[in-house]
Image (cartoon, rainbow, N blue to C red; front, side, top):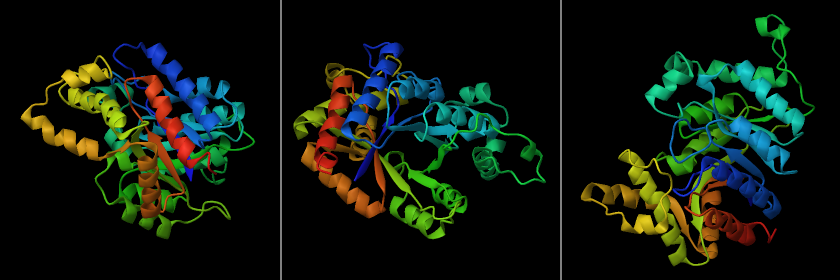
Length: 334
C-alpha cells in the first residue's frame, strides 16, 4: 500500500508559527525515512492555528531539506490565481527538485468571505470558469498551447526536464469528472466529505481519458487518522483536535490546538455533543493494528492507489509517532 502525508502545519496553543513550520519539516523528513510516497501542504488563509497560507514557500523549505519524497500542494486554490503564475511557481519547484513535484488543484476559497475578497477579484466567476482554468494550467505545464491561441507565444519558464504532476482535489462528482475529462490524477477528500466517495471514484475511473499515451488513472483518498500504541491513548490524543474544531466553530480557536489537559477540561454543551460524535466517527482512531485494518478496508472500498493521511494533534511528537506506527504496519512490511 502506498501512503502519503497531508500537512496543514497545525500550531499548538504553546507553539509559535515558526515552531509549527519547523515541525512540518521534521514530519516531511520522517515521512521520507519511513517510506511515505509524497508530502503535500494545504492552503488555508487567516485561519488561526494553521501556518499553511503559502504552500509554495513551505515546499521550497521542505524540498531543500529532503531528497526523495514527492512534495506538492494540497491544493493550489486555482480560482484565486492566474494559471500562468501557478505554472511558473511549480515549474520552478520542479526545476529545483527534479521529478518530485506535484501540483494539486482545488476550487475552494481557503478562508472567509473577507479573505476571498482580499485574495482576488471575481472569485465566484472564476469558480464557474474552473474547467477552462484547469485546461490553461495544463497547457502551461506541458508548454503545448495550440499555435492559433494567444498563449502559444509564451512559456511558463523555467521549463523543467520533468513537469510537475497535476492532481485535481475534490469531494464531488463534478470534480471527479473534471479530472477524468482532462486525464489527470484525482484526490478525493474523504475526511471532509459526506458524499458517496466510492461511487464518485468509480465515475472518475469509468470516464477517465488519458492526457498522454499510456497514462493510467490514479486515485488518492485522504483520511483523518490518529494512531497510538493503544486505542485508549489514541482516543486521548484525538481529543485536542476534536475540541479545537468545536472551538473554531464558536470563534474561540485562535490560540491553536489545545493541550490534552485543556481539551479534557472543555465542557461540551448539549448542542455540541452531536457534532462532536460525528466528527469523531469521521476520524480513524486506534492502535496500529486497528488503523491498519481500517485503511486496508478503505483502500478496497474506494479502489484507491494510495491513501493520504492527515493527522492533527497537540504534540508534534505524537503526530510523528502516529505516522511512524502506521508506516511500521503498512510500509515496512513491503
